Image 1: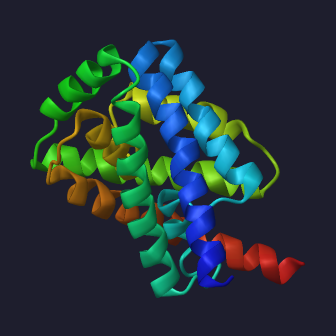
Image 2 (image 1 turned 90 degrees about the vertical axis):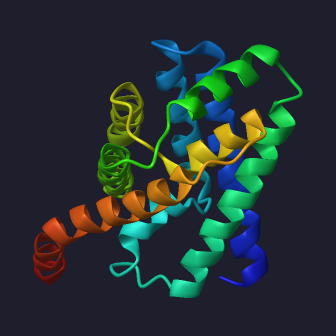
Length: 197
C-alpha cells in the first residue's frame, strides 16, 4: 500500500470511529455503546486503517513498523480534528466530553483498562477476519460498559473537549500491549492452523 492510500484509509478510520464516539457522547448508556460498534464495523468492512485494529497483527500480517506509526499519527491528528469540529455541533456533547476527560488520570488502573481494551480489539478484529462480526457487535459495547480505554476514541473526545490529557499516551501503549498480548497467547494455535491447510 502506498503512503497516500495509507493516510487516506487512516483518515477514513478516524472518521468512522468519530461518528460512533459522537453517538456515545450524545446518547450515553445504554444505547450509545451499542451504536458505537458502527465505527469498527465500518472500519473492518471498508478496509480502513485503525491503529487499534492493526497493531495486534503487526507480526502475523507483517505490517511495516513505519506504516503502523503513520496509521497511529494520522488516527490521532484526524481524530482530534473531527472531535474539534463536532464541538461546534452540540454543547451537550462538549459537556459530556469534558466530564469524561476529567475522569482520566495517569494511574496504573487506567493503563490496565487500556490493555484490556487492546485485548478486546484484537479479538473483535480477529473474529471478523474469521468471518463473523459478533466480536465487534459484542466486544465494542463490552469495553465501553467496562470503562476500558480506547486511544482513538479518547483523542476524539479530547478534540470535542478542546483540550489534551497525557493519559492518551497510556491508552496508546496499553492498547498496543493488550493487542500483542492476545496475539502472543494464540500465535502458536494460528501457526498450527496454517500448517494444516
